[in-house]
Image (cartoon, rainbow, N blue to C red; front, side):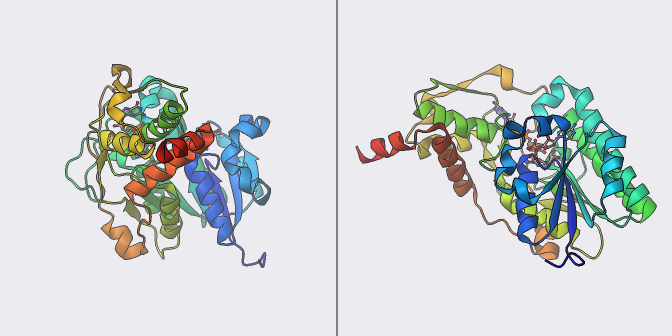
Length: 338
Ligand code: NAP
Ligand code: F7E
């Protein structure tokens, strides 16, 4: 790759699910990829950088935190970027009810710090903000599209609405290329264990291996529009390749309940979820988002983006990955051939 034409990207939150897929995708396109990570990640690389295992030697990482403007400013003062994907956030909705203050600080001030440092040091860099369907919350219309009013139902959702408006404001006030993706739920074998899909697929694998006797879950009737993270990072990149900055809903256009996810995931391992899943009020949220379903027509027509992994394939991939991880793939084959 010619260094004069090679594009440089900065990914905040590179250690997360999306950050790791995006880094791989951009490397594949020939980008020089840099990531911001918390200092603690550098001190515990085996655990904290595990999603980056396959590409660790191809990326450059820098210590910085969303709590510190100075740390972000420092990195941006040393390296010039063409594109900045701001993915770092406290991303777990449940946790945001427990500690709304740190969610707000990291997600709102963190976004503001990145935008302000970019404006100061490299205003021509293109900025991507990781918006969320949680901004729609108590939905005003179904499906949700770019024009649907926001009604967030959690500190997390509120923090993302604020980040979205900050991003728009930097676009309008300073003429910077600042775009938001309004991404609906996207999952993968790299999903954090606290999110319901991974909790279910890991639970299936543990039950199959005889390591657990039940799986405790909250609201089984909530419906989400679940896609694959690998597809969604392609959309992030496309959003920054447009001639001008804009906002896009990214979704599959299909909603399924947590119950349906359980049904499929347990069946994939030859089990009936009704024998294993137990309701536990601990996992209910003080305010729930009952249904999210996205209309990604704009992303389809303007970006040419389409998801490639359907719901069934997503569940299957996640279950098999966890069965393998827990080491019970062999016993599944035995029960199938018996
Ligand atoms: P994730 O796996 O939870 O990753 C979050 C990333 O943010 C991690 O790299 C984490 O670093 C970093 N981070 C958290 N707090 C930080 C702090 N104080 N300073 C520096 N870094 C910090 O999330 P994801 O699923 O990849 O999602 C990526 C982004 O998209 C997030 O902004 C999320 O809110 C948003 N989003 C996600 C979805 C979805 O369905 N996945 C949908 C819509 C929007 P550590 O590894 O050090 O914790
Ligand atoms: O919950 C219900 C729960 O935690 C999904 C984040 O990536 O997507 C994600 O947020 C649904 C909710 O994801 C359990 O009540 C039932 O209705 O997997 P989740 P989320 O809250 O949708 C959005 C788009 C983001 O932006 C976020 O960053 O599942 N549910 N029982 C449960 N959820 C969990 N976590 N655990 C349960 O036991």
